[in-house]
Image 1 (cartoon, rainbow, N blue to C red):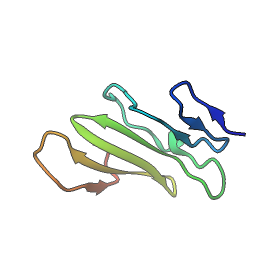
Image 2: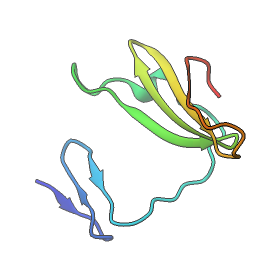
Image 3: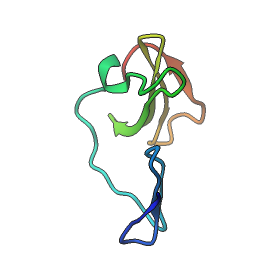
Image 4: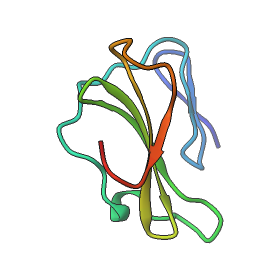
Length: 87
């Protein structure tokens, strides 16, 4: 059963959250490890989105290896970089 959030968003049993507004976080100081992104079932893995070293980072677990998509937020680049090396 979906749960209504205080901002009007909805959290679903599978962990999906919809927000009606902004989400704020501070810049990360460490990267996630494979265990942080371990699959929750045979068909559903995990990912995370965070900011580190002035880069927007999407990390995901691919067969036990954490992969990263990142883009600089300082305007120095306009392309995404894909790597298994943490930013």
